[in-house]
Every structure is written in structure tokens, then in C-alpha cells.
Image 1 (cartoon, rainbow over the protein chains, first blue to last red):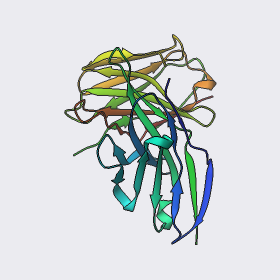
Image 2: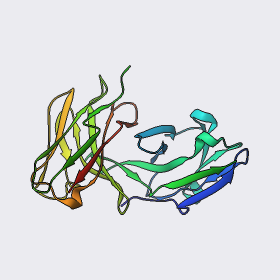
Image 3: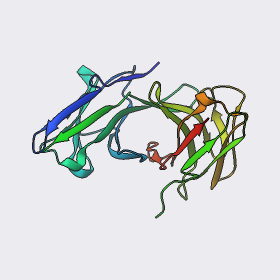
Image 4: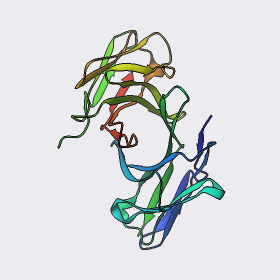
Length: 116
Length: 114
């Protein structure tokens, strides 16, 4: 069965500093990969996704993520964090079963705090 | 274009009462998903529909939970009877197969069962 690991439960960075959020997945083939962001009291908003092709994908709000097959990773990065980026970030993998059933499996999330 | 719409946004009820959560997916989407989010268990898929047909309900916790999708623009998740351990945020999401199943989430319903 597929799984997603986000090793960092909580990260604190200073405004203007760079950011990298880690995500590792376990799956036999190349899955669909997603990063979502959730602000307090809000639903999940899609930041970016990877299906195939260029392993470096650009998303909204200045985020990017790189798919590394050899490491089974899909880390999220941003060169300069803004205070409004404080939120919880979820990595997810989308997979199909042999019967065609589709499942999106989420990591536990990483809470990002930004200090002035 | 309106996103996924969920109602109510907040629900407080007493143990034993029936609770009905509602969802309107994005127009044109043909897959709909119900998730539950708690601090302990994170985001869990409860059930999903494709073309109004339930495809996978293995995440539904027990018989007290039921979900329906009578047409392409409406779905309900019902809990009867409700229990305090059902307290959580319930999200509905929709997608269009052919877009590699990118799911778009609603704002959620925060359910508190006293």
C-alpha cells in the first residue's frame, strides 16, 4: 500500500528566509504527487502537482517542488518566505488500484510558522 | 467559477442526534470525495463517488455513517446516531477524471458532538 511521510511536524522560519518542506512516499510505480496548503479554518488549496515530464514543477505563490525518483521524494521549496505563508502543508500521492479505484493518500502535514 | 460548496460550515449537536452534511461539487466534475480530518488521524478518505456511483466506501468508519449522491451536483454525508468521537472537520472534494484526478476541496464542515 502507498504511504506518505512528512518528517517535520512543525517548522519555524524567519520571514525572507528560504524554505524546504520534506515529503517521502512509498509506492511501486510513479504516482501522481501533490502539495496542498491549509490556512487555519480553511479548506485545502492546491499549490502544485506532478504527473510526468519535467521533475521540477512550479506552483502558485512562488512555490516549487522537485520530484526525485531515486529518493522517492517530492520536496517543496520557496526561496523567500512571507508571513502570509504561515499555514499547514500537506503532501499527497494519488494512485490507482488494479480495479481502477483511485485514492489520494495524505501525509500528516507540516505546520509552518513564520517569525518577523 | 464557484468552488466546492459545503454546508453547514459549523454544526454543534448532541450525542444521538442525526447530522447531515451537504456538498455541491464543481460543475462538470464527475468524482466526489468525502474526507474527515482530526488531530489524531489526519486526513482520512471516507468514501468516493464516480459518476454518482459509490466506488470505494472502505473508509466509512461504521454503519452509523452513510453517503449519497442523488445527482451530479449534490451529495450528503449522514451520521445517525452521532457520537462525540465523530467530532472532526469533514471535507468534500471534487475532481474531473482526465485531469489526472486533481482534487479541489471545499471549506469543510466543523462538526462538534456534545
